[in-house]
Length: 185
Image (cartoon, rainbow, N blue to C red; front, side):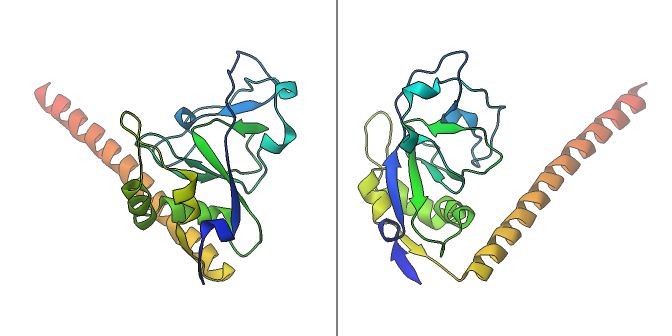
């Protein structure tokens, strides 16, 4: 099945707020994630809950899309995340039915095909930005749930393989450096 994002989800912007040192909920910002959309830091509550409308509290299954800057990525909000709201760096995509897994949508938005489409329509002189209208019109190819799960499993295995290769390269480099040091002594 092929459709546009606006036909399967609602899209809203994140909240503008000024984080503090302490709070009740987390103010998710793009800087909390690496270039692959994985959490890169430990999250700490930094907004007061009474300043935030309930409609902005993220729910498990929401997909965050970083629409500003050069690092455009998507991430599915998981139940292990603390209570959070998204900053204005993000669009919050809330699926309207269960034909698409949130993790699949995040994977699809991160795919080179989607990234290229979105970057072609990014606007802005100092900071490039992808508009809600462009995101609304993104065509989404939706296979059956079994295939979506298979795609996610393959992606997970591929990412594990990449991580293991990086670890092997680091260990190999340490070994070579140690052999060279030992040869000098």
